[in-house]
Amino acid sequence: MPTLIRPEGPEPDDVRFSRRTLATGVLSSGVLGGLAFAGYAPAALARQAAPITTDDDGLTLETTTIPAPDGFALPIFAARPAGDGPWPVVVVASEIFGVHEYIRDVCRRLAKAGYAAVAPAFFNRVEDPAPLSDMTRVQQIVGAAGYEQVMGDVSATLDWVSQQLWADSDKVGITGFCWGGKVVWQACARFAVLDAGVAWYGRLAPPETATPEQTASGQPWPVDLADDLKCPVLGLYGGQDRGIPLPGVEAMRAALQRAGQTDSGIHVYPDAPHAFHADYRDSYRAADAADGWRRALAFLDARLKS
Image 1: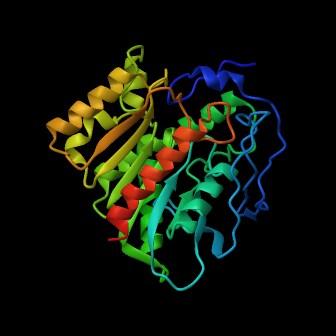
Image 2 (image 1 turned 90 degrees about the vertical axis):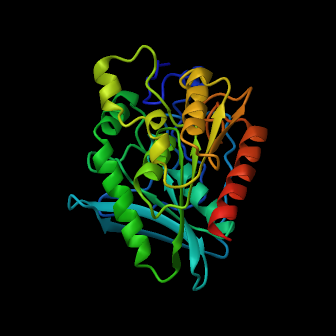
Image 3 (image 1 turned 135 degrees about the vertical axis):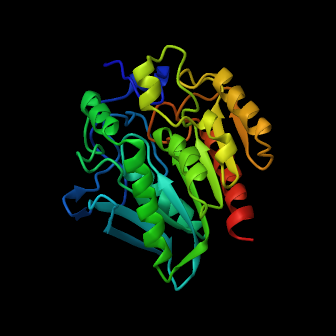
């Protein structure tokens, strides 16, 4: 098996990925503007995985493209409750594998909870990473998605949402996983329209072994953005995440405290590894994932449904 190097840092569970390519999702694939929404990412799908699958009963699903600031036709996947709404909105920032079945299922779960969930395909200017098993290529694709491009895609998503009659554009949040967890902190420091963020194990600071080039390429780091947060953020992290060690988590907590961000905070699951919510991977921890989802919904509900 290959040794995988991720933007979030290496994690022991990550090197036990299966090469299995058969997706187990129940949502049929859609092709739009050159984008094939594949099943579960084969680079990370565990052989023994039994992912949660959420049906689309009572939901409206949509795949479309929207104009990004650089002119790119940005693919998005959206799920919302059937009916007129308006529904509070949650932008969903994916892992490095893009908008694959796990991310689409997260959108459906949010829709079942009364939200309009929208997942932009940040990486598709280069190539859709979802169907790939070559982690070197996945890393190249992810590395091409720089901060300004990603923030531009978030901005385009927010603009599109504001034009939808089914969306309550006064109640907007963001959640994200792994790579997308870092995007949550960055977006909440940049966009005043956001009312809440939930970051699942996104890197907070450069690792101690990072080169100056790696440190610079990852900027801005969440630990440096605490003063700039424009809405509360809940961080959900694993105590056994070797890619995001606890000293980095404590540094973020201290930064939030210094900045007076009393409505933001971080919850750590002591025995959980990185990607403990990813139910298609070996790293999945069902109890911690369920508790994290409960906390995430409670956090979003308090700020987007009041």
